[in-house]
Image (cartoon, helix red, strand yellow):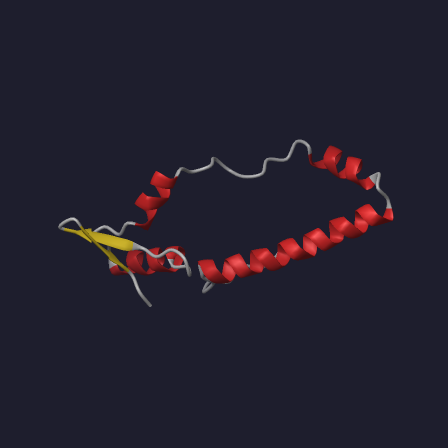
Length: 103
């Protein structure tokens, strides 16, 4: 695992996650190359583990990225930190026009 720092952004956490996944993949490949029976052992030991919590729908994410007009300054900072990535950014709707956050 890796440590999550207080000032980590979604982008930095994604990068840490990708790096960790590569390390895990290398470990699994090495384990399987050492003994092919390790695959059955891994399947058996991880059979009961859940992969994630409830899967959210796109409509949930769209609502999550929307910024309320009445949001406090502290909550706005949290929302921006939690939602800004290269591909996606939070937005606010004013009179039917969508304004997207830019850096």
